[in-house]
Image (cartoon, rainbow, N blue to C red):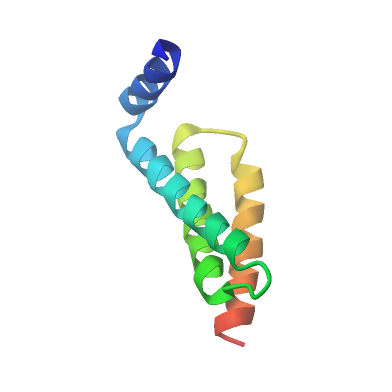
Length: 91
């Protein structure tokens, strides 16, 4: 348990802003994933698509702040989620 707590303490200490973005991102994406899982037979797209977009935007922000190469993957997710959002709400 101590290594896990040390990990979170170190994450918080190195960049508090990125830490809070990551925690928020995790919660938002868990809600989106749960919504999709529990509504899979009649997907609640108007709920989980915006949540996935918000989560991926937060992911872009935090990976950029941390200088992580995962930024490439998160940017891809953001583009795909933005595409889905536009298809669902704008077009």
